[in-house]
Length: 460
Image 1 (cartoon, one colour):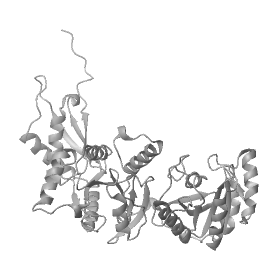
Image 2 (spheres, rainbow, N blue to C red):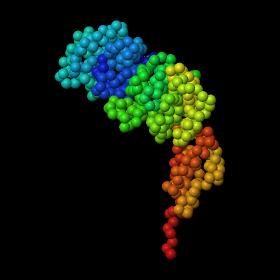
Image 3 (cartoon, one colour):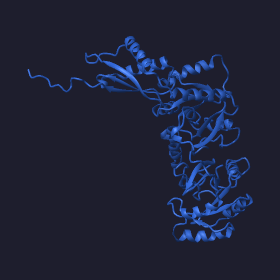
Image 4 (spheres, rainbow, N blue to C red):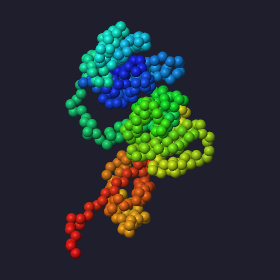
């Protein structure tokens, strides 16, 4: 079992910077503003030959019961319960504060090994602050600079004695490069939940998990980091990313929100299936359409979830009308699955998870070449390509070069002259013929080499 360490401390001491340093990626948002981290975030850390799970937490701070600050502290307490050891981080440049002293007592009561880390210890002021931390009674402070990577060797020496002895593994262990198709199918499906602020993304994921893993609030913009959680549903594993709400670019002014939006866009690019969540009372707004267009351009499978369905007055044929609206407003992902859900009440969750698996299967689909070219001949006969400047366009054949999303190469003459409207016709015809609803379909044009191009024209 992996050894787990929780990074704790008051706000703005550099916990997320240290987390990013240990996982080797900028996964957690970092800003000078205190309280950027709200939900706890897990990552796989490596320090030398040490490998362990690291948890970044919200800054320990006091707040009224039921407030967002108090619930952030509850998330931190949960992380401490899950951890095998704690890294208590202080800001060496500021020195000890009353809050540091109060939460040092809190860390001691956890009855777990504590490594005291004096961050931002570069320079004379940092050294003085680090010396002050001896007063906490948590042992020798490890002086580091998470931002510049200084002191990592000393941190390694402090963590090594806490780690369990390595488990001997068989030399004939299975190689990841030789995984069978069945094993690949068991890998978690990466799913990003995106949408406008306050669409109910975190509430939905909490219902899937059966616990308040992610902070929720009526206030828009509660989620800042893209937080990944592991979910198992009917024996299938999913890695689900909760993301910050995406507003129109003209409305984004604060630096922190810009960072949150960039983090959400990275989650979309990393995902395999993207669930676009819309508010049932304000669906198909301009920003929803922009987000859907972004998902299609990134080539990700898309599922549309209309949330807060419990607040909508029920009428006959509502779902059919919803599907018609989707095809009208989002023709670029025609046939995309649409599911009415209530994250708060748990309505439609099973249908949503089924739709995600179906969209993932379509996104991975490969079409046999023989069937593809039979369809191609019929499609051209039914609607021949238009003549351009009095010259006929010749389409030779088509082949699929990859899946994820389904991508095809069309060999033709005069590729630059084929109109986009004709490519849309081929795309929609292909969707219907091979059952490719909703997923992006890519057609790349390639001109067939002219076998007579090397021959010189005879002089007249």
